[in-house]
Each structure stands twice: as structure tokens, then as C-alpha cells.
Image (cartoon, rainbow, N blue to C red; front, side, top):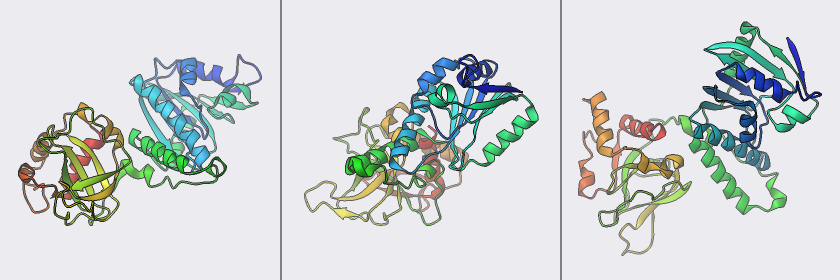
Length: 349
């Protein structure tokens, strides 16, 4: 057992963290507060030998605190993504402890339990004390307890983007005097990565664009909210809560998928080519930002589904193809199973 404190720069938390990380290939971090810029932290400790990093933290609903936390998480996400590191971000909103565990070849080798948050003040400046433990059984028990307390797992890039968009939406609408007391319900956003659809949910595949105005590479579908248009007839069956999986005319690649937020509305202009529309929320804005990088055509996905499920239809009416889309259909209702297969391809391309 070894005592760590910040009273001496040679034995402060950042110095000891660097030593412990040098003998590990996996790190588990549990800290309510985080570095605002993770580049400083990772550069200092060195992570060339680290294969995986798991972060467990809290995420507030207070607008000011949420803004800071999302900024930290984006920094964490960006730094590790650019270096092709394996990482996960989990949320435990009751977390108060500060725990740093180190593994090598699948085995726990050391751990630091401390009063110090993973911030520059916590690691260097504040008067903090911690204890280094090297008993594998104790470390395994602590890791299991941390895992069991997680409320939200594997926060995705899409969820971070949705949080950022929601923050921007509130920040532009509120004065500086009120920002700090406004609260956002983040629970809906943080469950998007594990959406569970009930038996009443309707799923549709829908084209965007037309042959003389196709959707070309470089056109992003990353807005949080959008209007999705339909043809001259009111889109029957599409109601609030329906899921619209969209693909681009021309490329025939998946673009993003949306949850309908409004009943069908008319533009009021009878000359519009697509006069009916619904308000919808994009549930995969990160994918929609670079959809053209993925070879997810509706034909290839349909073929892949049929290889796995040769006897199962893909349309709600029992059809085995999406041929009606070739003849001007502005939507086709899908089976729940095929729709979830498509959504799975978008979520994990």
C-alpha cells in the first residue's frame, strides 16, 4: 500500500497515474468531474501502450454544468477516436468516489482510490490524498461494484451530438442570467443508443430526393430537427412516434433515421411537388453527417437480411422486396424486424 498526495510534485496524483499507466494496457476511470481538455492529461501520462480506456462519470441536468461536462466528454471522445483507441463512456449519476484501476493482459495489477477528481486541480493542485492498492481480489470487487452501479452504458457520438444540439438550442433562447438555473431532461437523449420499440411503433422506409435532383455525397443529414416531405397525398399511417428510415435517391444509401414529432401538415401550396410534411427528430445525426462513407444501400441491406432470414417478409403487408419505391412510392411500411435490422446498420455501420 502506498500513499499518494499532491504536497510533493514527485508523488502527486498525475505523477503516480503516469507510473501506474506505464505498466498497464487497460484503464478504468471513475470520476464525477473531468479535465476540460483531455489532450493535456493523455499527453502527460502517455497512452501508447493502452488498448482500452473505460470512463465512468456523472452528467448533470443543470445547463451550465451539463455544458462543461459535455465539452469534457467530447474532448475525451475526440482524442481517443483520432488515435483509434478502444474506449467506453458510462454514466453513474450517484457516483461520488474517485477510482482509477489498471489492468494488464486481462488482470488487475493496481488501483488508486482517492479524494481527487480527474481534473487538473484534483491531479496536481488541490490538497488530495489517495491510496494505491495492488490486491487483485479487492480491485476486481471494486470494478464489479462500479460496473453494477452504471445507469447509462456506452454513450455514443450520436448522443453527445444530440446533447450539444440541445444545449445550443437552450443557450440561444436564454439570457445569461437564467442559463444556470434551466434544467434539461437528458434521460430521453441518453437512451437513444439502446432504443426499445414497442409493438405499436410503426416503421417506414422513405426516399429523399428525386431522379432529377438526387441526394449527392457531401450533403449532410445531421440536423437535430427536420421537416420530412411527402407527395400530393396525405401520408396515411405516419403519425407521432412513427420511425422514418430515410435513403437517398440516386445513391440509394441510408441517410439517417427519424422519430416523427407531429401530425402530417400541408404547406398550403398546391403546386408544391412534396406538399405534405411532418416534423421529425434525427436519431442518428452522427451517421447522417458522413453517410456516404458507408456502403449501406437498401439493396445490399435487403440482401443481407434475406440471407439471414430467407422466409421472413420485410414489408408490413408481407412483401419480400421494396420494389414499389422504384415506381414513385413515397414510403413503405416495414416489419419491425427488418426495420430494427436497418437501424442496427445505421447505429453500428
